[in-house]
Length: 48
Image 1 (spheres, rainbow, N blue to C red):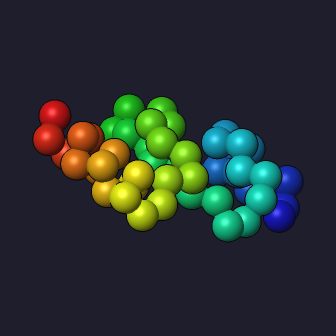
Image 2: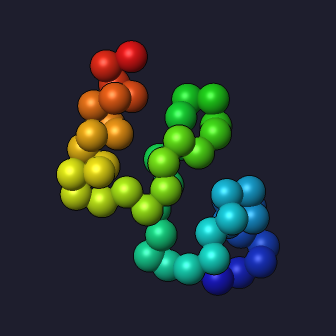
């Protein structure tokens, strides 16, 4: 991964695959969520 990638520097991506759920304010609200964990977090975020 290129050190010039601004998003990787901002959000601390060190490995691929990696995933982040980023809220509307730009803060990370979830990291490495998959399957049911991701579904639950999305329901939580979208219902608020």
